[in-house]
Length: 177
Image 1 (cartoon, rainbow, N blue to C red):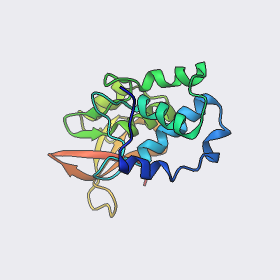
Image 2: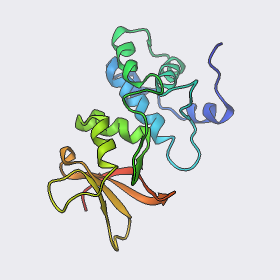
Image 3: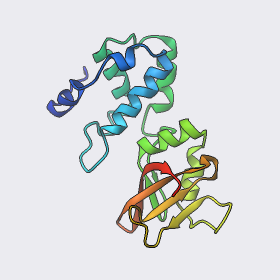
Image 4: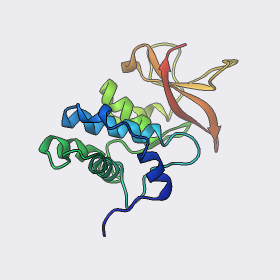
C-alpha cells in the first residue's frame, strides 16, 4: 500500500526549507530530517506519530522523497536502518521514574554516543550526589522539575518540565543549570 500523508502532515511538509537539507551528505540528510520530525513532534499532538505501521525511518524516507532527495543512495539507506521498526535502537525509554521520548533518545544516542540501555538504566534510579547516571529532582528550580544526568553528556542534561502518571517526562536537552 502506498504511503499517504494526512492533511496536518502536508501542512507541516509545506514549511520545509528544502535548501537546508539538499546540500548535506546522505547520512547528514537522514539525521537532519529525523531531527526535523522530532522538532515537529514536540508538545501534546504528534504530527508524525510513530506507530506499529509507520516508524521514524519510513517518515524520514518519505520526507526525503517529498523534498526530491535521492533516497535510494546506499548511505541514505544505511542511515535509515537504526531508525527502522518499533524495536528501534532509539525507541522511547519508559523507566521506573522517568520517560524519554524516542526523538530525545535518538538525539542523545547520536550526539553523545550513549547507548539506549544507559538511558533506560538512568530512568530507573535516582542519581547519587556526584558521578552517577540517574534522575535528580530539582527543588525550587524555576524552569524544570527534574534532570536526567548522563555523565557522557558533559555539561548538558535532559530536563523534565512535567510529571505524567508519576514519571518525569525528559524532553528537553539543555546546558546544565
